[in-house]
Image (cartoon, rainbow, N blue to C red; front, side, top):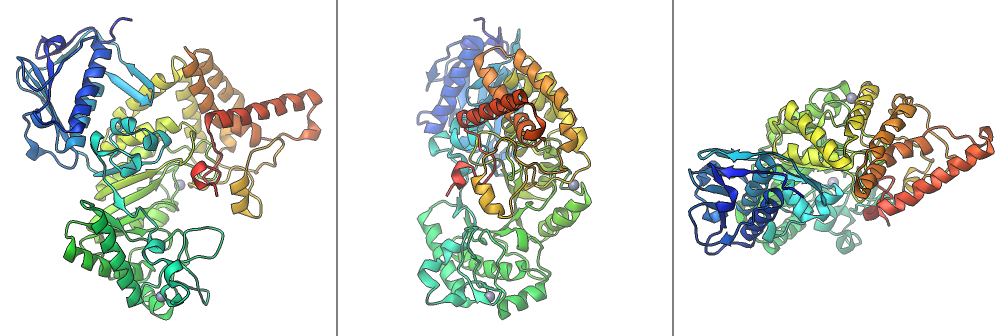
Length: 593
Ligand SMILES: [Zn+2]
Ligand SMILES: [Zn+2]
C-alpha cells in the first residue's frame, strides 16, 4: 500500500530527518504522546522516527522538552510551534501535550479517527509545515463530558476526542481527567437514610404530610433532605469534608438533590421557598452553609449543586456563594429548536433560567441532553442545534458541560456521529457553521463509505419534516402502557405491536420508500464487511420505525406478507442482540435491575 501522505516536510526538511525528543524524565503521558506520534507518522508517511532524549539537528520536542510560552495556555490548552528547524508540541498540562500531538496529526497530517478502529488518513501529495509558525488552542470548558459508549469505554478514543471528564476513565498515564467527587444525586449518600431515618425521620423530606427517606429509585416514594434542619447541615458538611480529604487534589465536590421531585415541604423549608419564589431557595441557602465550611478548609474546591427540575428556577434573593458551582439541566427543553430562544417552549423551560443563573452564579456547569431516552432507536433530529446550544453555554460563562447521550447501549440513531460532533464542539464552542458541516461530511464519508451522500440527503429529509415539532428528550414514539415505568423496563419490540397515532416522526416516515432506497444505496457501495456492519447497525433506526412504528395489522395482511414481516422482525431482534442495542434508557444495560 502506498503511503497516504507522499511527502511531509517541516520547514522544508523531510520528516525522515526528525527525531521525537522527550525530556530526561518524561512522564508516562509524554511517552504516550510520543508513541502515538511515532505510530501515526509511520502510518501516514512510512517514516520511522526514533524516540530520543538527545536532540539531533531536527527535533519534534514533546511536552516538557518543548520550548513554548506556557503563560498563553489555560486549562488543558496547547501550542503547536516551529522555530526554523524544530517542531514543538506541548500543553499547559500533560493532557494538553497529548492534544498537541493529536491535533498535529489530525489537522496537519490528515489522520482521522471516527470511532475506535475506524480510521483513515487523507491522501495528499505534500504536507508542508512552515518553518516559523505557531498555533495556540485553549478550551472554553475545562470539563468536557459525554457518555456515548465509545467515549466512556475507550480511553485512547476519549483522549483523541479531547474529553476531559473522569467518566471517560482516562488514567494519569494518558493525561488524567477532571473528576467530580460524588458524581451527582448525592443527598442520599451524604445523609444516609439507612443510618438516620428510623431515629430521625425529620432529617428527610416532608412530602404530602409524611416524612420519606432520601433516595434515587423510581418505584417507591423517596425524597430529599430537610434542608432547613441544622443537624442535616452538620452531617452533610462532615461527610463532604471527609470526601474531599479522601480525594486529595479534587477540584469539585457534589452536594445535590436526588433524582426525584419530592422536596421537603415542612413549615421552615416551605417558608424559605415561598420567600425566594422557588425550592432552589432552601437548596442554595443550605449549600452555601456547606460551602462556607469547605472554603475555610479547602479554598480551591468548588461545591457543585443542581438546578434541576423543581430547582431550575433561580432564587429571588440568595446568591450562590463564590465557591458554589450551579449545574443547570436542560431536561425539560425542546431539542429540535435552539435552547437560546429557539422556541417559546425553550424560553419558558430553559433560557430564562439559564440567563438568571448565569448572572447569579460565579461558576456554571451545564447538563444537556442529546437523545430520546424513551426510544433510543428513533431518529432524534438535533444535529442542527448542537452548535448553537454549545455556543450559548459558552456565551453564558459555563465552565463545565456534560452532553448526556445514550448511556449503556451501542446505538442511538447516528450515535457515533453525534458523539464525534459533540466532542469537537465541546473543545471549540465557537466553531463556524462551515467547519461544523465539514466535520459532519467528513464523518459520513469516513464512517459509511462511498454512498455517504445519500445519508446527507436522508438527514435533510429528517431536518425538514421535523421543523414544526417541539421534541423533548423523553418523547414517546411507541405506545406506553398504563404502567409506564414497568412497560419501559420490560419493553422488547414485537410483531404487530400497537402503534401510536401522530408523533414527531410521522411526516418523516411518509417518505419511507425513499428513505429505504437511500440506505440500500449506501449498503450497495460498502467496500468491506466492517463498513457493511456499521451501515446495518445505523440503519436499525429506520428498521425499527418501519417494523414497529408503522401499521402492521395481521388480519389485513396476506399469509406471505405476514411471513415476510415476521422474518424481518426476527432478523431485527437477532441484530439487536448481535450489535448490543437497547431500545430505551430503562432497558439499557446499566439501568437493568
Ligand atoms: Zn424541611
Ligand atoms: Zn421547540
